[in-house]
Length: 347
Ligand SMILES: *Cc1c(COP(=O)(O)O)cnc(C)c1O
Ligand code: SF4
Image: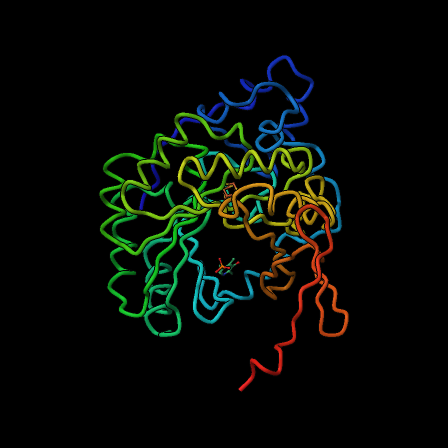
C-alpha cells in the first residue's frame, strides 16, 4: 500500500511577510500542516475563507474543553481502522494523509500522524470483520483521504471489498476533487468504474473552491457513472451565511454534485473557533429551502457525541391545532393543512 506523491507548499511560502508565520509554525508542530499548490493558489489573502480552512491558527492550541475523539470512534472500532456504528454500514479508514490538512478536521487526532496507510495485517483484519458481518452492506472508505492511495492500492482494497457478496455499496469520502483535482485522472476513473455501484461524496465548503479544475475532476467522475454527493462543514467565518451556502449549493448542482449534508461542527479539540450556534445552521436551512432548487438543499446534521449517531435538524415549521396542522412555508406564511381524513372517504 502506497501513497501518491503530491507536492506541498511550505508554511513559509504561504505566510511570507505576514505576522502569522511563527504562530502557525508552533501550531503545525502539534497538528500537521500540508497544503497543495492547487489549493494554495485559491487563497487570496490572509484571513479569507480559504486561508482560514488551511492555515494553522493559534486558537487550535487553546484549551477549549473539547475532546480529541468526541464521537468515540476509537471505542466503536471492533478492529483498528474500522468504525462500525450503524448496523448496515461501516467506515474503513484506509489513509491518514490528505493533500491539505483542514484545520477544522474531525479526525485531527489522526490525519497526518504516522506514515502508514491501512495495510498488511490491519487491512486483512478489517476485511475479515466485514466478511464475517453480513449486516454490513455499505462500506465507506475514509481517512484521511482514500484518493491519496495510489491506483494499485485502491484497486486492491476495492477488489477485496467487491469479493464480499453482502457488500452492496461502496462509498468513497474524499476532498481530492477540491484539494488535489489533478489526482482525478482518466485512469483513476477507469479503475473506479469497475467497482460499481460506487458513490463518491466530496467536500466543498466554499463557492471559491469551485473552479474549472475542480469542476473538471467532478465531471470525469460523473462521466464514469459515479453519483457524486457533497458534505459541507458549517464553519464560522467561512460559510456561515445564507448567501454563501446558497451559491455553493446551486453551483455544486451545476457541476453534477448533489449536496448531501451540512455538518454541524463536531466538538473536536482544537476546532472550537470554527463553531457556530445551531440556530445559525437552522437559519441557513430555512434560507435555502424553497428559495433554491430542492435538489440543492442538503440535510443539516449533528453527529452526536459518544457515537450516538447523526440527527437531521429542520427549522420548526409545524404546529398542531386539533386536527389542523399550521405549516410555515418558505415565505414565512402560516398555512393551515387539514390532517384528518373525512369520514366519507374512510372505508
Ligand atoms: C456518518 C457515518 C456513517 C454514514 O452515515 P450516512 O448517514 O449513511 O451517510 C456511517 N458510519 C459512521 C461512523 C458515520 O459517522
Ligand atoms: S480532507 Fe477531510 S480528512 Fe483530510 S484534513 Fe480535510 S477534513 Fe480532514
